Every structure is written in C-alpha cells, then in structure tokens.
Image 1: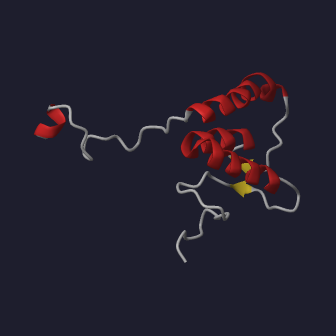
Image 2 (image 1 turned 135 degrees about the vertical axis):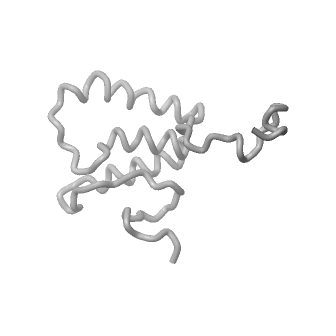
Length: 110
C-alpha cells in the first residue's frame, strides 16, 4: 500500500474499478417501476424476450451505468429493436455511451 492511500487520499491505485455503478437519484426513481415489474409481474409471464439480457435487465443496467437520460435513451432504443425484423441474440449494454447502435463485435472507432 502506498503512503497516499494510508493517509486516506484517493489515488488511482486505490479506486476499485470493478465496483458496480451506482445510479443517480433520478435514475434510481426510474428503476423503481422496473424493479417492481421484475419482482412481481415478470415471474408470472412466460419468457418472451428475443435478446439476452432481457429488456428489463438491459434497462436496469443502462440506467445504473449511464444515468437517467442516457440510460432511458438506450432502453427505449432497445425496446424499439424488439420485433420480428431484428435477429435475436446477445445485446449487452455498451461500456461507453453512443447515439449509434454498436453490435457486440463492432469496433467503437472508425
């Protein structure tokens, strides 16, 4: 351990980058109906989602990782892609926000 970390100073080495993202207060409010749906409604419905993770799981992760505005945009974009015209498969929440849809194997830089 370095002396800076012992003294209570936050350094790059002392930060845990693997910790889950904490939602902003507005995102936390938006997560309430999603949590209610996932706990009380979803268990009684047959699994129908074309993607992994499910749309509600995707929305929870997007709101937690990217905040209320960007997370809502990503969740809405995902719901609009859910239909017979889109091939099913794995569709994770992007690490970095972008207004364009990035397939999991596509590079983020052009």
